[in-house]
Image (cartoon, rainbow, N blue to C red):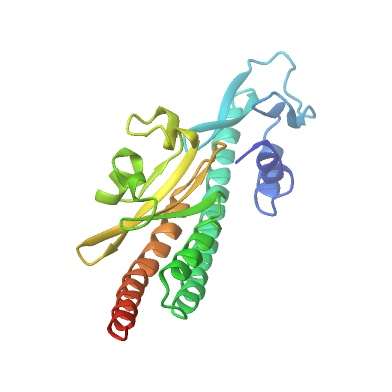
Length: 253
């Protein structure tokens, strides 16, 4: 929640704003509510309490972070507590809405991707579709895929991608500070990558990277992992199909 959202909750929220008015009407306190920069959001000077009454300063907090301040006599603490609760509830609702939207996008992606990938049995074509989808993560970036038997397989020899190939999907938002990074990987600022697994075999790595800093999130990792789970078995089938075609071609010569 930023300063603009805090102002909206205090001034225009259909539940919080009336509740705050009732709370302030029940006291004669002179109360000022500001954001972190000290900009006044609400300045109630109409109270009948003495102007020189002892003043307190209480934070408005959301998830342990201070979002603003309530200043005034003793009731300021109660006002801050109410606003902290209201803002936390609003933040939770927004988080749930974002999660629902991310889940919808993920399911839509899985449906579209399974339909597109299933339409071809060529390794390059399947890889191209997977790379295209990896480049559409919510946070941005460019998709890539490195196969263990592909032309860029040396990128999987150690480094972050090598660790992902043998381990789990990862987000690395500061590649330069990761001691595992190879010289090639240090040309990137941020990356998120997932192994391509078919049963017990690991055939490569799919990921999204950026040469400028990006704050990849858990939602990006979830989408990328979904892409990997769909692309890996199809890539394996495509490899078998292409090998069979090559054998058939040799047999006819």
